[in-house]
Length: 258
Image (cartoon, rainbow, N blue to C red; front, side):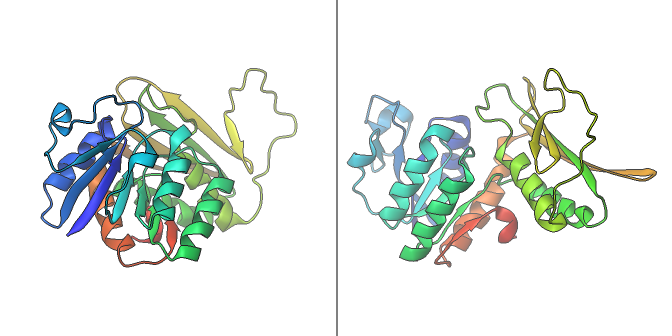
């Protein structure tokens, strides 16, 4: 039986994780964490009486195998560091950490031989999209990324969009060329990662969509994925849990285990 703590349990993704755990015979929910909740009574959240509720990291003193995190960008680094330091394997779906923070967490986890994963997206379709984009990047010198999320998403661009741009850059090994005469007075050309433009859209009606557009002489290629229900992410979370239980290092990106 794999024992799990869920951080950000009261949010929309956290609720999906709780439902997934309750539906799996080999997973057991032993704790939930959210610093903004006041009551520590599991009954107030329709949780089993055996589940411990925490609103401070210092309170957490239970035995757990997995720390599943769908909290907020400002808290995820400290949460993940706490989990690793306490030999709890992190499965992190919260985006917004810097490259330096991720590198620090990976160094810590690897030195302690604690398996874990930080994934910008647990959607299988999104991971496949990134893999396909890597293939296309070998044959096109120019690309842009457009990502669409709900209006409540706090970080922009999304972790998925940033990871897509990084994967493209890793394949190409150089900055994409820019038009030196381009004028952009109001920031209409979006963010820039080594010359790859990233456009973040935040509107009601979206969950998480992304498209990568490649351009070449006389042709274009668009790779697009759509997420219409957050429950779809649970397939990737289940895959990640199974994998990190077998590993002794921190993996960055679900694409590295699929």
